[in-house]
Image 1: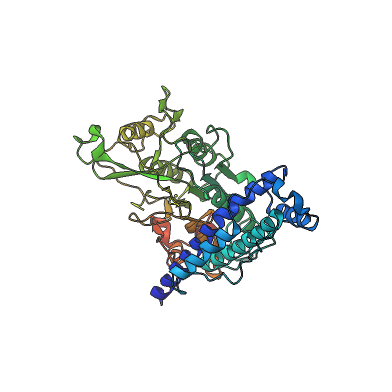
Image 2: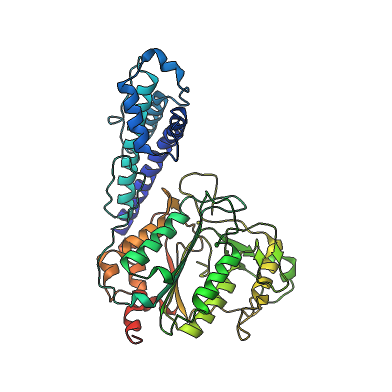
Length: 466
C-alpha cells in the first residue's frame, strides 16, 4: 500500500510539473499584456481578464495591429501541450487538450489574448487540483485567484496555554549571493497564520523575520545578526518567558554543508573531520565582516553547532519544551538548495572552505554566549539533544524541495497538524512524522531530540506548569 501511494504521489508531482511548464509562457504573456494595455499597479489576473473581455466586446479589428505583438502564440502553447501528451503515456501525463480553447486564424489580437488568459486560468485550476491531491487536502479555487494556500483555521483539542507560547519564524527568499527561492517567505507566513489562528498565540509573542524578493536591502532581520538577535532577545533573554513555556523556532530558506577537510586550519586538529552544517541567513556570501566584539557579523552562516549551543542555553533557562522546524537542506541531524530548474527547487547553497573557521570563531567569540557553554571549535564536540525536538524537511542524502511556491515539507506538515491526528492531544511528534499524512515524494522528514516522544506542543507536559 505504501509503495502504491508513493508511486501515485510521484505521478501527481510529474503531472504538476507538466502543467507548470505549460503555464510559464502564458504567465510571461500575461505580464506583457498587462504592460501593453497600460494597466497600473501590480498585475491582477482577474482585472486583466475583464479588460481583455471589454476590449474584445468593443474591438475595432482595423486597430488590432496597434497592440504590442504577442510574444508567444497560443497555437504554439497548444502544440507544445499536444506534443507532451503524444510523447508520454496516459498514465504519465495529464490529458487536457480537449479542454484548452483554440482560436481561429482571423481572430483579433485581443481575442487571442483573452483566450490565452482563459487557458492560463484553466491550467491554474489544474495546478491547484494537483497540488491539493499531492498534499492530501481539499482546496477551493476562486476565479483567477492567485492564492493557492488559503488558511482555514481548524478548531481542535489543543490544550496548551497560547499566552505561554513564544516563537521565532524565519523565511528567506532573497539572498545577497543569488540562488533565490520562491516559497520560503510564503511558508513562514503560513506558519505564522497557524500559530495565530489555529493555536491562538498572541502577535506580540511571535517574532516574524522575512526577506522577500521585493526587498531593497539585506539589512533586515533575516541577516545573521538579525536571526541571532531574535533568538537571544525574544527567546533566551526574554523576561516574559517563564520556565516550562512552549518555545518554537521555524526556518525556511537555504541550508549549507561545510567539509572540515577542505579547510587547512582543521586538517591537523583531531576530531575535526566530516561535515559541519549550517542555515544560511539573507546575507550569506556577502563580504565577511567581524566587529571587535563579534556581535555584528555579516556574510557568515549559522552552524548547526552554534544553534545547538543557543538551544541548550534557552533550555537551561526556560525548560525543554522547545520545537525546531527546519525546511532546508543539510542541517542539525545530519538531517531549501537552489539549482537552475524553476520548478521543484531545492533549498541548498554551496559553502566556501575559507569561511568555516570564521563561522565557528564567530560563534565562540560572541559575548552573549554563556561562559559555561561548549565551544563550537571543539575536537570533542557532541550535540545536545536533551532540550528540544528538531524536525527537518529531509534526510541527509535528500533535498528539501519547493513546488508551486511553497516548501513541500511545510505544506504537508501544516496539513498534518490540522488533521484529526494532529489535533489529538495524545499525538506525539514521532507519531505525526511517521503518519501517512507526512509521506512525501522526493524527500522523507527527519526527527531528532529527546522531545520527539512528547505530545505535540508538549500539551501534557505543559499542564504540569500551568
